[in-house]
Length: 165
Length: 95
Image: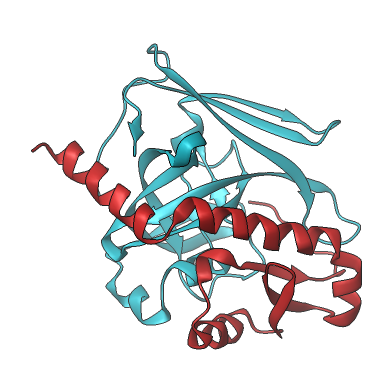
């Protein structure tokens, strides 16, 4: 599926935006993982919500897992998702649906900066404990700072043509 | 009107209809409540998924799909709730 919109490469001068996040444990006693909170919209379904996403610099694409996709879509709507394809992970291949989406960064004054992407939505029988992932399709627009000592995450994005509503 | 203008208008419409910024503030409240009370909640709802709105646990279930189906039927604004798994089971992930 083609992206609805695309931006030029990250080396271009652009306007700076920032996503801040934090480290959080996935389970009691486990290591802390870096998360950021962004808005995710699926325009074809007229839905949007905040999603906490694991920052994964090894992921090519941003993905939604059932814990979040089920809050955006009713189960019946999964049959309306268009193209299903396999994505390779460490544990093998997983089936995803590709859907036009946008990642939203909430700004002051009720404004939002949107980054259009094609998001991968995991099929419903994917393991429910896996978090949604922010991948390099978003991180490619800037610099990602992971500070595990202080538990902070900052993603600086330089967008040449920011889409602000 | 360009496709970018149309797309921008569509995004604004979705954000406005859902009161995105207001919903985000309530979501933050719900999420913070879970973080601040995780130990207590884990004792009460061990190995369960919970749905929290502000400082209230609306539902708990070991099955995520059943839980979200239940909460959808209740009519609550899903943009405002936090859904969390409360477990002490070691569950490392390798993506």
